[in-house]
Image (tube, rainbow, N blue to C red; front, top):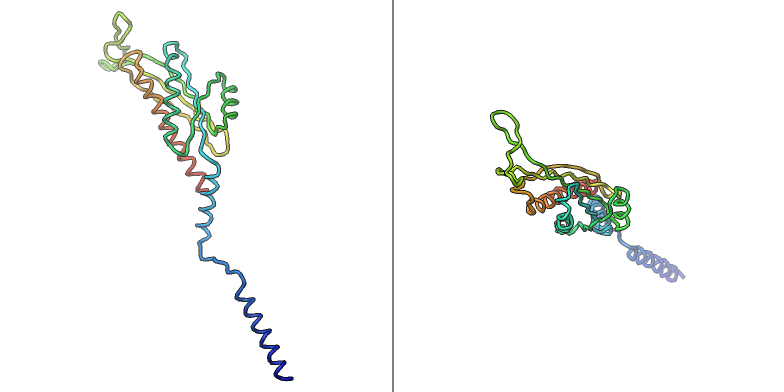
Length: 203
């Protein structure tokens, strides 16, 4: 009888040991911060690339013929970054541009305007317009492009930004200067997008 009781107790003990050893093991060795960073990276990847809608305009007729080429070059320049996708926006008014950009899934609307103007130089301490030849062209490269753009946030992933700068022209029209102006603006926008994305991921 005692032998039977002893065997029953031994079997019960061995069964408890097997159950404990079969319990799942939880690995808490990974730092909590590392897991959080990994989760953030995964969520950012799932969101896909940042989409930028590009619209270029000019009030002067002599610049109109360059608008399509400038837009195409800006779209291509922005798309150099794997995290960014760019699309052309063709609508005219501000409201129409926003609507088209949202319909195309844009996070940003980049609206850029160009204006060609005659530069001035300092002579003998005074500002004077540069002299013109008979055909209206300046002898001393007195033309420049005034570039203004606004990067408008359309989603919570984005942050609005605006800037302006000027690009010198060797003559009028200077197609290369116009293309360079658009590409320079695109480069500035890429830096701003990267800063915004870094700020978002750190929070």
